[in-house]
Amino acid sequence: MSVSMGRILGIDYGRKRSGVAVTDTLKIIAGNLATVPTHTLMTFIKDYIAREPVERIVIGLPTQLNGEPSESMKYIEPFVNQLRKVLPDMPIVMYDERFTSTIAHQAMIDGGMKKSDRRDKARVDAIAATIILNDYLQSRYNQ
Image (cartoon, rainbow, N blue to C red; front, side):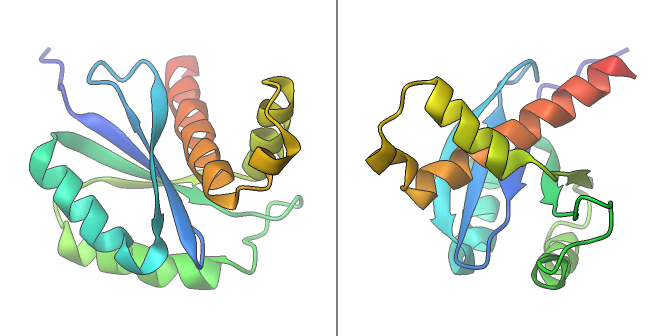
């Protein structure tokens, strides 16, 4: 069995900004990569993939507490469809992200981050992307 050394890219898609996280090559841990203006996200992903081996992309799937797709799905779906056209050979996984923003905020509080820094939405987006990706990795190990 060959072990692929590609990273996994995680995306917390937002209407204005999107957080991007990435795993190490062994796919053990995820870390912040960047927060980018959403209108530049496609270019950012293509540029990153040109430089680094990426084996799949995980995109946070916003759902309501009852499990129904949230309002923001209507912005995410067109992006995902475009991504599938641009990168037809790249596996793209939608992963339930119901609580990530809340968890990201709590992680910042627990980490002792100052209130002014917690208001930095870009930082929240990058942390949320990291949490989505770490949750996804965890779910794979638990299978």
